[in-house]
Amino acid sequence: MRKQLLAGFLATAMAAASLTGCGSSNTAAPATEAAKTEAAKTESAAETKAEENKATGSGETVKVICPYGVGGTADIIARKFAEVATKTHPEYNFIVEQQTGGDGFAAATAFTQEDPSTTDLLVYGYGVAYRHDLGKQFNTEVVEFDRSEILPLATVDDRTWILYTTPDQTLAGLLEKSKTGGLKMSGGNPLSDPHLALGSLLAQEGGKVMVVPYDGGAAQKKGLTDGEVDCFVGTTQAAQEDVEAGNLIPVLAFSDKAFTGFKGPQGDITVPSLAGADMAADLDSSKDYTKSILPAGGSLATRKGASQEWQDAVIQVAKDVWATDEYKDFIASIMLNDTEIYGQDDVQHYEDACKAALEAFKLLSGQN
Image (tube, rainbow, N blue to C red; front, side, top):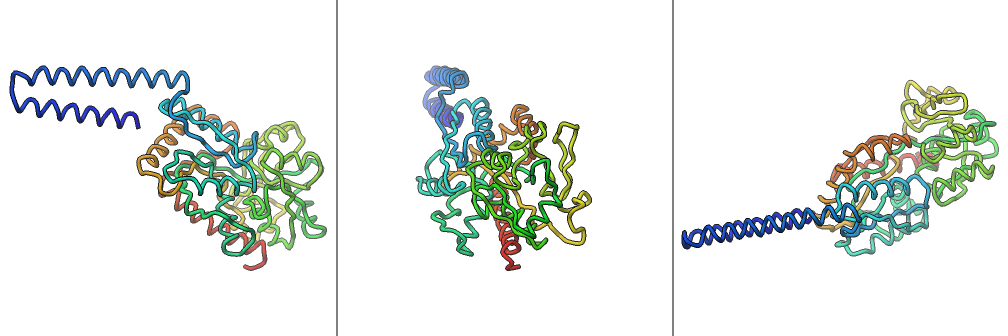
């Protein structure tokens, strides 16, 4: 925005110089030189201020609202994004603010009540959008916000869900338990995207799963390591260290191809998928499980009605963050997907994802 203001100043100064020149040749040169001198001073001051902001993080404060607990994948992504964004755009100072509750609903509700002119940004997860539509269409829960008031603009988190369990269990054992006594999984909320993914899969196997709620991926994983639940569907980052230590094992990737990147005590681990050539051997190869593959992660969002100038600025900041080695290397280090979707393409991506979630719910609930 500061560059745009500077450009406007320069345009005004040049126009003034041009008008002076039309009046008298005696005054044209001094006016032009004065405009050039003033423009140079302004540009120099702007550059100096930008350098100061870069060093001190004293630019315009922009809050990045994270609806999930400290230490979870969404939280560490938000903090890394804010850190890199402030470095690449020192005219802003991005800070992360936690606003937990309702597995994302509390933050979404509060965000839609903000004035559209706000510069606050929301880490907007697909799961919140899914549960919104399910609540509105099937009355699965009370929804006190309208997701059309949230405008996703830039992907910051694209993840592959992984099914984890303890080393003494197997995928075959989990499938069998879901058919007999029922399976317990740790999750944020019933009908969260991990629940939709696993629940719709087990429905095709004649099984059931109960969600034990925890706030954030870190707490959900801990529920499994503490023996309170049978499994955990989460991000690669959430259980990466536990897999390496041998405390947990990844047994299924909610993808159409195997997931590689994990290392365990015995070396590299390849996680079979629920579809495609790498389908897990314990699944029925005659069945189509692709309805259980849902977009996961989330985007940075503004309020609907935000100025086009601010929307464009957010998109540009996100593109510049993704262009850095620091952010890309960070995403690779926690084994998330290198995916960038912007503007109206991101809006449409959410619409398509919500349609897929509705189909997964129909499977889970036996309405398909």
